[in-house]
Image (cartoon, rainbow, N blue to C red):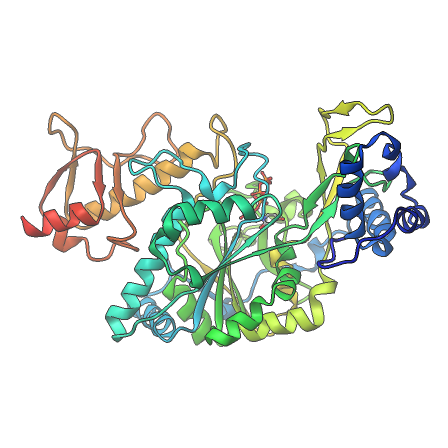
Length: 510
Ligand code: UTP
């Protein structure tokens, strides 16, 4: 049921026959009402679907939706300590060793980053790709721009340390919804001064949404409701678009995969890369300590001895509440969709495992046309979207590691529209401003308001009533907070402060 690229156009008879044998004859119920142009487009769409697989897909979706999954709890255990690293628990020396290793790999062109940007961002509710969202920073930068500038900076840091002229290629997985606007946006912004040939955009597949009894949903009289196949569609998309070949050609051995919505993402983080490489890992996940047993994030752990992510909805409350001797949660490793993969591992997944990925069922409100041809916008879930998840390849890893990082430094996702209590434009903006305020303080600067009063640090990045000082530092000036002391030490800096390259030069000259 997935579009098969380059599929020949079928005749109406062929399509009708295939739909009937798949139990989906209703798809053509409005055919006589369509005009010639609509018929052409619809027939083309239907010709591109793997109609043979349609029945399996629909029955699978309906079955999965109806059957509760077996309890994993008795088989769960945390990832063993020898496979876990932690920023908080490591000494400065170890962190520096990992960071140096990562920078070395970057300087030798062995590291790429891969952005998952095919999602529809329905909770945020904007009609354009989430990466184009501006959370309201003083600079007005979008998520895409922030990420592009981090690539610039990490290349520069590696070059400076190793005298190289390195490239971190940026692979961007999009979908039918996000490819065209993303391409246009990058072009309009001159690829944020990155070399366009080092930005590789490709598209994931789409699959139909189905009703609870396994019938394909018609979004219009001549249009099936299609959705991207989940961020785990990555592995099929890597094959469809020959991305692994591109990585090989460039000599990329390690890939950092991340989500578009985390404003604090440290792309190609040398410490994480270095940790994974040093450990000889083929697959790794950054995690943050869960804030509470009930926090709705997936947990990185083992089930029957195999590393994987168990979703919060799959764990019984008593298991989620389990605590170790020091009172800490036993299952505290919250997944933040920041993954390390070797190319060899991805090749193995592509060759042997991509068809084995679990299908997750999401219940969604899918707009549809009813049998009378009326357009309906459902108020409660009426359909199933089957999704694969990017982390579902962990079980195929031979040497999986987890790396715990500090939430306030690395994780603030943009999921919801403003007004939501968490993961909104305001919380994302505040998380970044608070981080930059901490960097300025660590560089021994003080931030002052207009009358000259020293501003205290914000109590918490998400506290709407106590927002952090307006202090934004361009990634082109500093990636991790490095290099700021020579610019800022001893200064009282009026806010709003936007420390971009121009301002940095002015400060240097003073
Ligand atoms: P989410 O699961 O948060 O989905 O995606 P979303 O589409 O951004 O938002 P909602 O659920 O519709 O509100 C996590 C990451 O996975 C990517 C997203 O772009 C985001 O970076 N993703 C999601 C894909 O690349 N493809 C998909 O099919 C789904």
